[in-house]
Length: 253
Image (cartoon, rainbow, N blue to C red; front, side):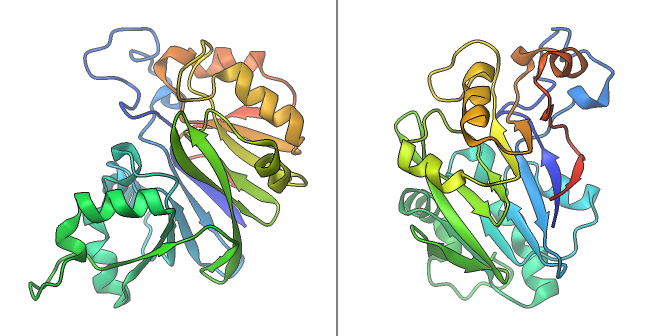
């Protein structure tokens, strides 16, 4: 499998509008972060998208993505689902309804916020999506996916494990029984907002603690804010096998 980081930034992205900090003024492309999303391509060439945020259209065009077989939603905050309307071209090209996998809370929010998609209608050209509520292992795009329950402060959020790979973002707590579902993964992606603690996201120290518990061969940090610091400087501080992810990075799993 192959994973491409489409975006590795927080809800405001990096640079942040009107901010003049060193990170936001950096000329290093590694410090330029769209909102968090990633594309997993299976050995059979099927594409699975993790979250569909406000930069979805730009990310699809940047990477010349012509088909998506499934979308996995971690939670329904806007920086993770605001690209829903832009599935329309894929509906047209693929001549299929888009399969979206998520938990009950996210389904309720998306059905409310995108009521026009899910209400009966005869207007041509609207997005077409099928929401699949998951709480047990399921099949998406021909592969088994294990949902892992995590908490984003008080909001139940989903992480996902696919074989030797796990994807976690917008988590601030993972219960021991859910951590057990991650044991044995070789590659893990996990959110690390900044060095200082935050009320609803893992900070760097907390993310490294989860990595130490799970012990993947490689771990990549995502959902990174400008408060974390310059990419090249933070990378020097990380343990062996832990990497700052950046937009457009592609890794083999």
